[in-house]
Length: 200
Image (cartoon, rainbow, N blue to C red; front, side, top):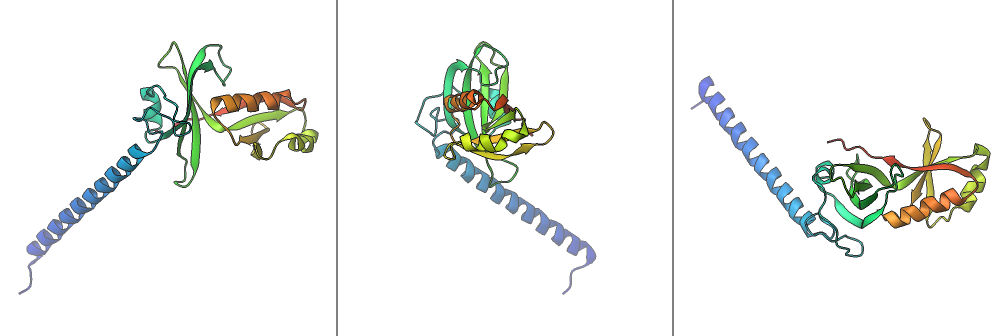
């Protein structure tokens, strides 16, 4: 016995509803498992201890956890000078690992919060230092100064003509040492951290 048009439409509609419901339940289940795994990793936001060194950290400001919802706190330092150098106030600094544009890309973000202002947060790419040489003829001399175990030139920002130097160590203290080292060479005129903007 064949189904009429009306019965066929009803059957197809019921099948679609069951399929969509089942697939959304599977996706929700997979996301729950992922959240549980993340919660077990050292450095997760609720653990209040960093992934590196098990250092206790203050709870993340809401604007940081909103901008980076599922990161891992790798490093934390409190009441230290800002690496942005845009002000002289002390800051609390979190270095957070997250994923970049591609799921396989690991991205490290430095979040700085002024001590007296819970709403004033600045974000930077933690492992990258933008530098300007006195002139391009110094590039080979500059490369020779760099310890390959600590630094790697990963490119150039063509709009600003700055070299992008990756620092292998990127705790706030390590970044400060790296910046001081680069500035101490007579070849560099300026250094800066590159701002990071959340796509959320």
